[in-house]
Image (cartoon, helix red, strand yellow):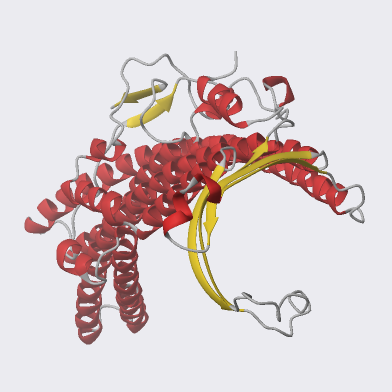
Length: 473
């Protein structure tokens, strides 16, 4: 059974396309990297709220109201809706009303009046008044105008789905940049801590060199490592500034606002895991970019039918009712009444191949839209597989690194106790502390990668509002 959204697009938009005519896309029966389970609860459509981060919630809510990317997509939808009204209006009679008054002085040398211009009573000054209402109507016998309306409806459906795609893109990009910002801030804390620890180790090594109990090469190595550690801080600060500026642009607010609101470092948020309990084919009915591509295909198909109809005769009806008089008083009398009516057929027997070329262009556009649709479907499936694989990889890395951090933390506590009892040196303590900071830096990267992959998965699945989702902790 073809999904409801697809059926709606085909029924309301296409001239001749049917479910059997849809492009065949080679897709697997299930995802390889994504575990599919039956859903127990659907997450909120505002999926970002699962991160439990008030800063992120505020950013996305503001972006939905004032993002320029969303505003641009909304304007395109308004334009497409106006196209429907224009196309629908072309199927109705056009009615025009006019009124005019004219004062004319006739020329005696005008060949039309030379034979009477010298006769008694010839009046050179003539007044003319007229009022009329006219109507014209093209009979859409072959569906030319109807096909244009169907194409406009499909274009509007495509624009509507593109608006949803824009919202999804903006919200997921803000979430990804926010996670990246918090990651950079945490890495900066770790880098500064690591630089401090190495500096302390270098200071102690210098003291041992002065006492002649340690070679200078060890001191120089530690000084070099401390400087290398310090050198990683400025790029992190620059990257933090860049992320905050990009967030401001996405939200549609003054650049620099995030520096005031998000400048203080915060821990990475946590979120549940979102899984999909559907098959790859179900993406056809839920990814906004796929639905937009399908609607565009339906629009191009309708234009092919319209191009066919353009080569057929056109039938027109026209009529006019009005009055014409030389003065205002008799203008509304029966003697001044003027009636006209006509019916016509217009057929271009030879146009140098232009109508045929127009039909070939429309067919080529259908082939192009079909290829875009197929590519979009395959890209969507690839997006899901890649995001799911990245999330699983990040989860494994985070587990291993969490265990390593725990072991190093325990070792540091033991060494600090041993140092207080004179059984371990401060150098040993600082060395383990440095290794612990390196482990934490790698761990926070893995945790952020997991969050980023989860956000990418949300985007790949077409958003959070669906019965096919399952959220687990």
